[in-house]
Length: 501
Image (cartoon, rainbow, N blue to C red; front, top):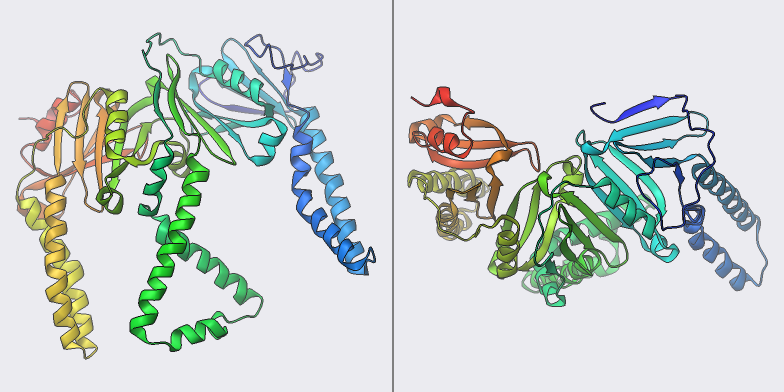
């Protein structure tokens, strides 16, 4: 069997065997069918607390006198509770799982029976997640990702059973040991980097957009609200700075709260000789595990604001983390933290210094970035402003924007570099986000050479390393056309010998 398989109404030789009771002490690959924790039923019905609390408050406010609408609400809650309880009970009764010597099998379904069987060799990562309700009940949700980006989910197991099952699913033959398995731990001082992330401004716009949609749906025009009209009627030189300051304050508070929820109790460590584990979360705890052999490299990211504050973050280039969205969510190895800490984590994982000197790219790459900024941003905006009858504003924009574009182009060019260092290919590029890649050379499966007409005239190409992990492809832009094939052959020998003359 080469991948996950689904079978409907498949007879099973052990389907009628009595289920072993899971007591949290003997979850091992013995081939016995196990069941979910019975507390999963309570977890399914826990969301009823909010509507029941609302009904209780209504009863207190009215002295226990309900109108017909209140009785309808109570009836709806009772019906929902019955449906959820029946669903949770059916899931608990009909879901079984087991680990045999070679496979992980999950059997589920009430009317349509399903048996999913996955070879242990194709399981790439196992995540444990517990929201606040699960934590109160001592439960965890287990997700096992496969090489085919499929996922097997068990909701929910006791925390002890989930941890032990994860160990069985991630058995590795790798016997290397680390003198210090803990690579990084959360430091509360890192929270100061939260306002230097996208959510400081982006989060405010998300909240405002949601609020606008809600108000609009209930028939309220936000721009007719009194305080907004007063704000719009104020002096521009007062209104704009105050609005911007409010955005920064609200965004910073929101970004800090989000950072704390996502990364409190963070810990990066080798859970065993072959499994890298990331544990984090305040109210909702998350635990992501990935095999050492699935780790193709790491990426040091330094967005412009975070870099200005001396921070950086680290993500994994690993296979089996799911689709693009799941990969972005699960691949984080280090939150925004001091750059020195990020460099230390990269070096512990790869043995390479991410800040080492690299080979520079042709100087024509600087000219290309300057021309790109001038022709795609500065000149079109200036022409558009002048066409609106504001030539003075257009002139001021040209004077201000041109040196800014030059500075950004210079920074982008200084960040360009590449090197082959032992088992790794190193590459650095970007200015709005300076990214330093340490990619294991054995993980490269193909090369792509690409160049625009202007790039061909300038004699440069972009070399992309295809990897069956992470973002699937990693670019090294503006290499000298004559040097790119030699670099590709040196980094991953044997893929393109026909390009070398």
